[in-house]
Image (cartoon, rainbow, N blue to C red):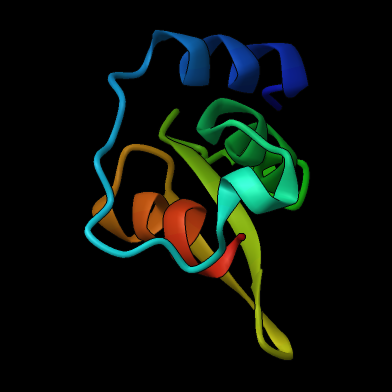
Length: 83
């Protein structure tokens, strides 16, 4: 299982994403984009499948969804649903 330091390192290495519309005002919340993503990553449970692929289980509404860590669906969750 990947831990919070691995997630933080991946986020720190990521290129900035430009938002057309942000679901929350990060400045009003007092959070930088980086800090908001780190906060969101605490909601995800990171795990590896038997074939070695890294996934995340994330809360969506009243259920959990499972996404490959490098998938667009996980990125979308991080940027929209997780915040």
